[in-house]
Amino acid sequence: MKQESGRSMIEMMGVLAIMGVITVGAIAAISSAMNLQKRNSVNDEVLQIVTQVRSIYNQYDDYSSINSATVFGAIGMSNQNPYGGTYEVSVNPSNSRQFIVSITGLSQSDCQAIVAKAWTDSVGYEMSGHTQSGASGSCSNANGENVVQITYGE
Image 1 (tube, rainbow, N blue to C red):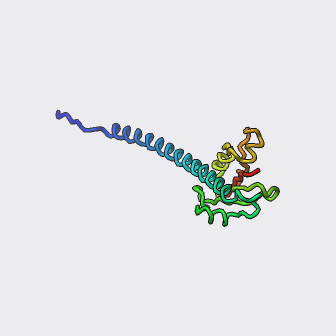
Image 2 (image 1 turned 30 degrees about the vertical axis):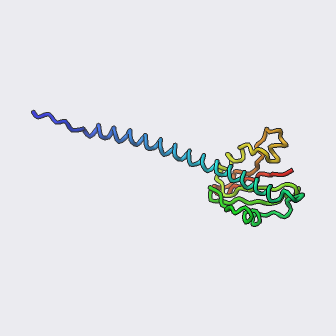
Image 3 (image 1 turned 135 degrees about the vertical axis):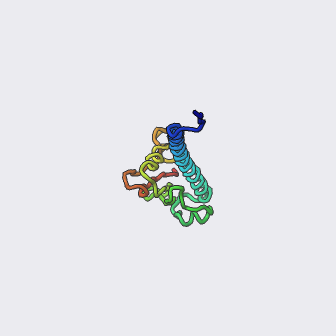
């Protein structure tokens, strides 16, 4: 008899199964990294918005004249966030010495992660003695419809 040195079908299926498991793991890792990148982008962009609002309005006693159009026009930044929603800036209706940065268009899990993050220098974070995140929002709406609000100022 002649000896054949080819691979059997079972060996090939085993290799394909191993490659499938590795691919599923890689996709999960990439998805997790993309979500982390979006959250980091939101953090950086909110900090940029807050810094710019404070620098633009530092000569005023309050923030009563701000709104999203003036802020984003003045700082030259888009109001679009990485989740497909927008950033909105408004005056706190109960205190004109505070402004609110809203993040719209969030899924439930992203909303929960952003609400849980410690927003240093926000009013809620400072008033809680650094024990609460400083952000608020209801994360029970359908994906893409959740909003988080972070209040800054005095």
